[in-house]
Length: 66
Picture 1 (tube, rainbow, N blue to C red):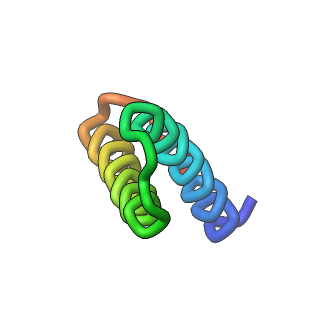
Picture 2 (cartoon, one colour):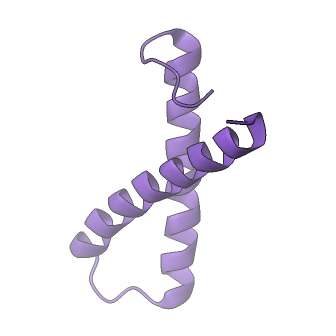
């Protein structure tokens, strides 16, 4: 598998994980307007990506498709 494909799959996994967290938050915050929902999705996507990369760099978790 090429590096580009691995990174694309990795980004997709991070996006799905962030979407799951966003879905949980959406259950707690009812009636979000679409603009806020997009901002939250992007924020959680960035956070999940950062967290995964930080944990992998620290050696806490095994790298996924890296």
